[in-house]
Length: 618
Ligand code: AGP
Image (cartoon, rainbow, N blue to C red; front, side, top):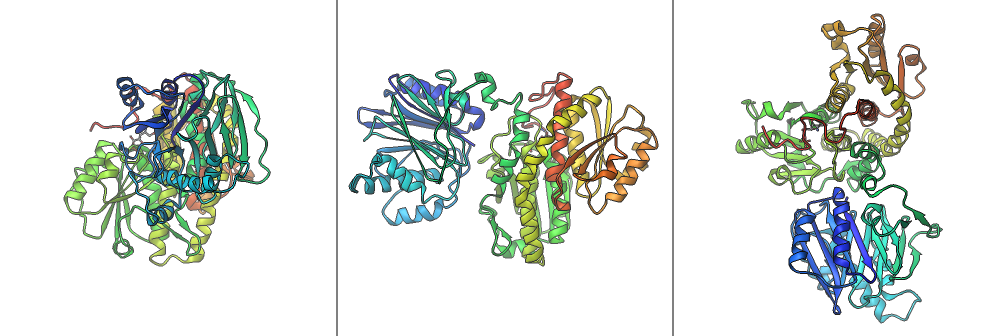
């Protein structure tokens, strides 16, 4: 996810563009840049680091110009460096572009452009798009007039070649009186001002200047002047542009109108799941594909043991990964707390694969475990969300989540994206062994249906808020699940304890009889993750054991399951899916339950006491 701002008007553009980036920095903050049109040429400033660093650069070297674009980056291709920062220029250096999204076919386009003599300064997919627009601009300028501005025509023709997602803003020093915006899959809005117009990733960047906005639809292409806008579309029958009024204030806009980042990120999980899967499945062979493992198929096939090292929520995702790896690939897998793994003298041999899982890519215990394993000559893969993070850079290979910035300290969308990536990795390891294409096809089909099922699950939000109100004063909770849902129970307990400060423990449901059941009384709720899966009857018996001791039961159940509704005090229904994929749905009610209880208890949901988003101490 990245932040884009564009301005065309009568004021000095640079301050407006940089202030807009400050308001969008939650969308990405590893590098930033700004470009304005000055005296018939493009003036460009960009650097790795936070927006403040860019602001200082521009203050030291002021930028003139009343037309410009700016960008704060969340790296998807290429580490956060000055060269990879946006804006990017075309071959001629007279067209500038900023982009939010992923151009999936960028490599093929890049090779074709190189063959035509193009040279590139960065490793980003975005720079390829800038050059593609430049190539089409040359053709559009030489072709007979089409009634469309040649720069707009160039953007339209270039986007027709693109596979992937984009939200872009484009300017050219050959046409200082226009700015072009286009979107597919990434948000982009037009801000309609008085003698000035704006482009932005979301309303927060421009609400200080105008509350009149146009929310662009996929395939829209808009051409803005300081006093007008015109619209064309790459799709069929897309609706006409409509001006709306921004309702929420700037502060709320930063969270997309949500009360907290955590809630926003819970509700982003349909899209973040799509991002985790995007471009990684070869449907013909029912084979997942990863670009950055840096291990050959033969090397992957030699792996005879997997050791997962992680902390907290990432450790819970790793636990799901253990079940997935054993189910799909029959590879012995164990999950170690990084803080333990780094000090143990675990016997590892050359065919042991170490897999570090981390949202931030900076957790010191996980980094230390990775370094220890590499010191002993082992290959280490990492599953990270932050591109260019320390763990990502020090791994032999890895897989990025592409979940976008996760700001709330309590990890939510990272967990589901980690489980999705682990599902693909386990399928890959299985398919190069003896997992049948038929079985793999079935799992892939179910996995690709998950984003829509997440959207359905999120509709339980109000029901969950009602249930949260019933139990917000309880002092202790148990979370219980079996098989794939045991890690989900652990994750639910962690979510609750870390943001509501209520004591909560997760257990395998069957383990309850070996001690925890002594805790059960009328004031101690047990949350069961109890879908209609292979272990349902066993889990149902555990629910009956709790009810026999008057313990309240909250059940996360498969929609349509009436039997459990006759036994549990409260039920949260989620859609049905394959047993191995249920964690992707079952965790969402637990995230929302913890969130609403914490809000009712007046806790600081996004910044809980004693915690930090990235634990870089040991
Ligand atoms: C999860 O909600 C917590 N914020 C914490 O347990 C976190 O998962 C853990 O610190 C690991 O962080 P990482 O994924 O960035 O390595």
